Image 1 (cartoon, protein in one colour):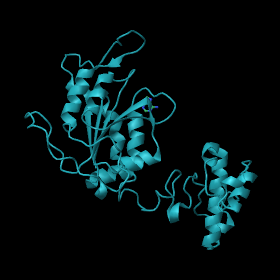
Image 2 (cartoon, rainbow, N blue to C red; image 1 turned 60 degrees about the vertical axis):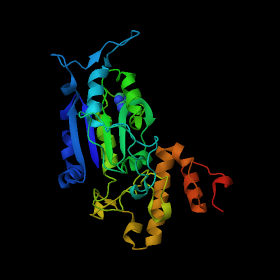
Image 3 (cartoon, rainbow, N blue to C red; image 1 turned 90 degrees about the horizontal axis):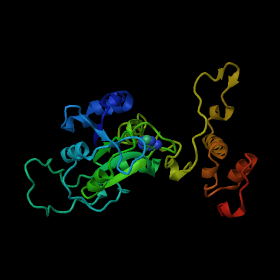
Image 4 (cartoon, rainbow, N blue to C red; image 1 turned 180 degrees about the vertical axis):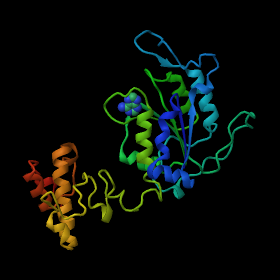
Amino acid sequence: MRVDIITIFPGYFGPLGMSLIGKAAGRGDIEFTVHDLRSWTRDVHHTVDDTPYGGGPGMVMKPEPWGDALDAILPPARHPPDQLPDQPPDQLPDQPPDQLPDQPPDQPPDPPAGQSVRLVVPAPSGKPFTQDMAARYSRVDHLVFACGRYEGIDARVIEEARARVPVDEVSIGDYVLAGGEPAVLVMIESICRLLPGVLGNAESAADDSFGAGRDGAAMAGLLEGPVYTRPRSWRSREVPPVLLSGDHAAIARWRRDAALRRTAENRPDLAARLEPLDSRDAEVLSEAGFPVSGDDMAH
Ligand code: ADE
């Protein structure tokens, strides 16, 4: 996967060289390029912002440096309709045949046939980022992140980019950050850990909170429950005995019960959408103060 990031704070992305994602980049499985937006400014002060038309507080990022940066990084317009891939990459449609006239020499090179590209613009006003979106982004060949600061980027930049490639404005939560950089780090971490070979244990992503669940989605829709490791007894606190029993069915049931309790406690919105539920699920949820109607039960 290729990842380009455009920012006025390139130093923010030092952490991409660390941990599992840094190792994947070292192996060449992910190719990160961090670009300084100011290198596309043309004035001596390297100005990237200006006052908003119509008045109001704060500053808006100027379109010219952004336009030049995206011209240099995005491929020219030749992409299929705006659809995130939801199938494995080998079933993705190829790009349409080249019907554009010859490009001027200063255009970036064509992406190889079948390569998908997407521009992601972090913004508190964007669509909520989810695990499902992370999974679909992990199947894109080339992601470009455009980090806005201040009150945001002049809207014409996004409008023009949309005519060339699929663009998503994405929010990582209902709070306002000072800029898109931390949101991009969050998104990259959640996307890149899903790439083949990045996590040590291939199955561990499936068991995550918000993961698809293993074994035919046994834990799908549930938050992950508590986990334990050695020693068995620590400061007089014991590991739950069932986890030492070797009884796989009992362990699976205990884990599901714990996940149900945690979901009911921390995310009643998710607990209300759980289905199908068996009679033990209903018992656990109602003990957790979350009564289940007969309609929610599996038959
Ligand atoms: N920029 C500022 N706040 C943000 C948020 N909540 N999500 C994504 N980008 C942002």
